[in-house]
Image (cartoon, rainbow, N blue to C red; front, side):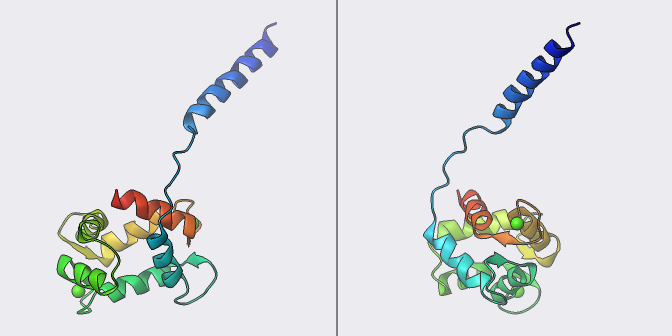
Length: 141
Ligand SMILES: [Ca+2]
Ligand SMILES: [Ca+2]
Ligand SMILES: [Ca+2]
């Protein structure tokens, strides 16, 4: 006896837990700048609507002005300013968030690899516009 009652209880519990795990999503403010950056970067190799690893790597290379495989803060801000990506506060915040091991520079390893996986929320190996915009926003706020 009570078997179906237990099942009902479990279902109810799952429902409650489930709803707590998916709270009503805060609306992500649309960021036209992030979308513009995504669109340019995304079409670098294949205009398929996704930012691939290679395309992400191209961005890295562009910021690495002297080609030593490391982006320091000066390079980052210089390229940021050149592309007029926004205010410098934003640039500094992004730089320090991207510097995952906090050694004051963004290097291919580990920072760049971390960053790609950080953007690729659903882990399908490519970054969609929605993934990019939402992560970009969370990084800069
Ligand atoms: Ca460099
Ligand atoms: Ca670093
Ligand atoms: Ca993805």
